Image 1 (tube, each protein chain N blue to C red):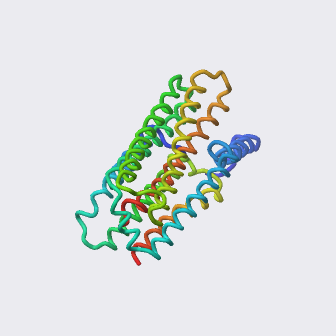
Image 2 (image 1 turned 90 degrees about the vertical axis):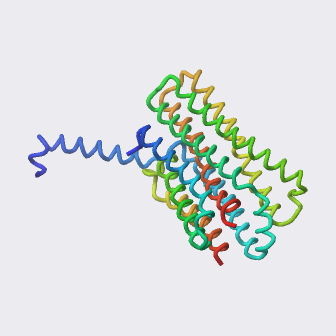
Image 3 (image 1 turned 180 degrees about the horizontal axis):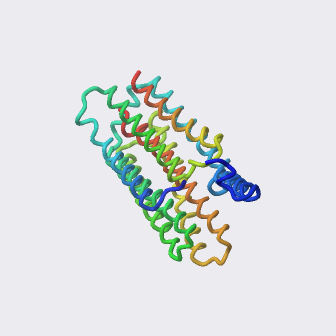
Length: 210
Length: 85
C-alpha cells in the first residue's frame, strides 16, 4: 500500500507520525521514577560486590565454603524463593490494577506484603536455627558472608514490606491523580522486583551450587 | 506491549515450576557440570522473566536494560564458574 492511498491527506499522515512518536517516547520511559532507578542500580551494585566477593572467597577456601553451604537447608531457600516470587507477582498485578483504576487495587499490594512476611519468618527461623548450632557472623569467612549478605537482603525485604503497606493504605484513601497513583504503584513494585531479582541470584549462590 | 493478567499469571507459574525443578535436579543427574549449567540457565531465564515482564523493562531505555541484564549475567556466571573450576 502506498502512502498516498493509505492516508487521506498529508496532515493525517503527520498526525499519525506525531502519535507514533509520542507513543515511542512514552514506551521508552522507565517504570516509576528515574531517581528511584538510580537508587535501585546502586543497590544492585552493592549486592553485586557482595556476591562477587563471595565467589572469590569461595575460590580461595573451597572446603570451608562447601562445609558452610552444607549447613544450609535447601527447602527453606526454595520456600523463600516461592514466597518472594509470589510477592512479585502480586505487586505486578497491583500495578496493572492501579492503571485500570480498579477500586480494590490496594489488596494486591497487601497480598504481596503478606508473601514477603512468609520470607521474613522463614529466614528468621533459619537464623535462629543456625545460631543455636553455634554459627554466627564471626564463625568463619563463609558465615561472615552468609549472615552479612542475607541479613542485608532481609532488611531490604523488611523495608519493602513496610513501603508496600504504606502505599496500599495511601492508594485506599487518596484522591490524588491517576498519574501519581500509577507512579507510586510502579515505584514500590520496581523496588520489590529488585529485591526478588537479587534473591534469584542468591538462591543458587547459597543453596544450589554445592 | 505489556502483559495481560493471564500472561503475568502464566509467567508466575513458570517461575514457581522452575524453582521447584531446581530443587529436584540433584537426584536425577550425576554429572555435576551439567547440573551447574542447568542451574545457571534456569537462573538466567528466571531473571529474564522478572526483568522483562515483572519489572516491565521490556520497553525501558537500552542503558538501563543493559545494566540490569549485565548485573544478572555477571553475578550468576561468576558464581557458577567458581563452582565448576
